[in-house]
Amino acid sequence: MTGASLPFSIGMAQGTPITAIIAQMIAPAVFILACGNLLNVTMTRVVRAVDRARALFVEIHALPSGGDNQREAILAELRLYQTRINYLQRALSAYHLAIGLFVLASLAVALNALTRDALPWLPTALTVGGTLTVLVGAVGVFLETRVSTDAMKAEIARELGTY
Image (cartoon, rainbow, N blue to C red; front, side):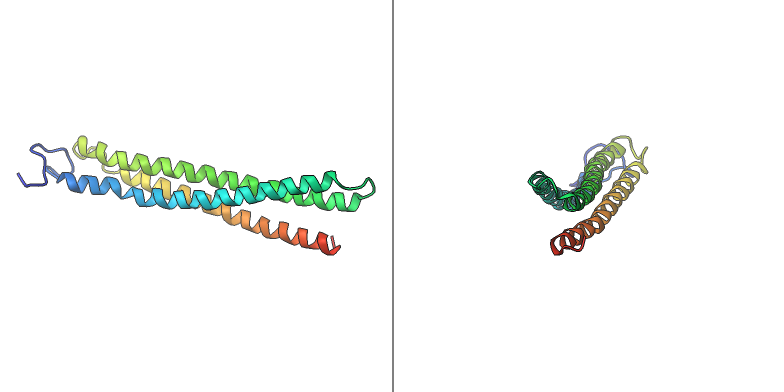
């Protein structure tokens, strides 16, 4: 018996040291940390979009009764902010799902070890699933940044009177 092994085999190629199993379980933590950072950045974008939409609500309610052109321009901007928030919500959901998949991947390493390598594909499949889900979230944020740019252009055009 080696110093880092358990006196009995817990799977993963007969007598795999417990430290190797723990190291494999910790590996998804890097992905979880990355998703946490993506969640923070995306949530900041949500807060900014919501704040700007609320400011536009105040603006539209303060318009005089004859400001139909300006009202239409503000409504067009609000539609862009609605689209932005929808993309961001999807990205947030994807990042949360990815975190869950990475946690499951970590637990799957232990499960595979306990079942003596009966499920060697499971940790990898969950990690790949989590990675693809992060990609879905990143695409959502990418699309949101394009809409954000359009919203900024609309706001500038309205301020310049070229809407």
